[in-house]
Image 1: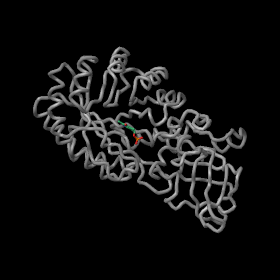
Image 2: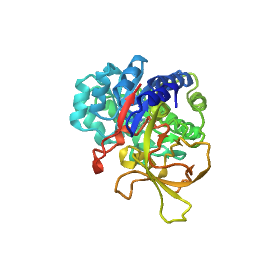
Image 3: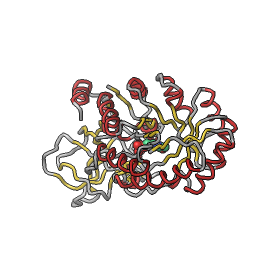
Image 4: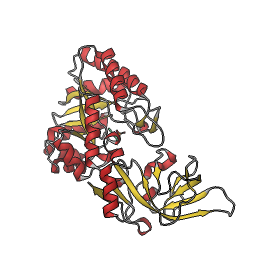
Length: 376
Ligand SMILES: *Cc1c(COP(=O)(O)O)cnc(C)c1O
């Protein structure tokens, strides 16, 4: 919790549940990332948190943007981003959205299939395109990769065809999975993509960029390597692969920019025991899976929870949301423990919820309003 957030909660006592995010803390994160990888251009992954105050601040800081839809592109433009600073990074795009992006001056597009490449050639002629390669996602708490990317062999063929189709075969990309806790996953991916890059160059294709994606982890319940460790591992692998002839480097951090800049303030609705002598208490909060905590699916992301009774005796709990849906359970198997004094009406903080929370909130399921947001 930053001093600014603590002060806001104390003075404003906002209605729960709500996200409170310190935009200055987000700026600190952004700066730390650019310091760790000074040779890479940062394309903030808008989906992590597309709120206006975040995009406005990032435009001021000179960030570029990775957008997944025309709506996200429009949000970036409205915050003052130049079209040239926006990458349309989704490999699955509607034709109408490709056309709208192209008309708005966006000139950089991702693809991972022949079919998408054809759509780009027809609807965004001359655009810079980059091919997403499938890489291992081991070590990621929130993997992505089975849905996206293609093999090295097919990327080789598609990148040659891109040039023949009047597109600019600009580069290659990968994503090692979100909340990736292993630096080795980037090293392995760079090795794989680097070899293809060299082959393409040797074949006379004017490929110039490697997009390393996002995935950089933040601390939830468990310690993770810092951004400097990832920066060092990445640069080591890049130099091993390319020597002095480094290509343009892009990164697309989302979680590591905004995640720990915000918290959710929530109220305990009920503390109960299934049976009188059950050691495990069920703690129901006024936010759950449908209120925005979707990354608790499979108990993948394990948020830290602070209570007014921290430092007193603890006992085991299961945590759940307030809806009448059986899937609305946050943690049952992850050995959460909370103070025995915790009771209905207490206000708790769910830490590091600045990324992938607000936009996952449902529309009035069971009558619960989407998560309120305060950017300070
Ligand atoms: C989601 C996503 C990101 C951001 O990932 P983080 O793990 O939040 O850093 C970056 N690039 C692409 C293509 C994505 O889909």
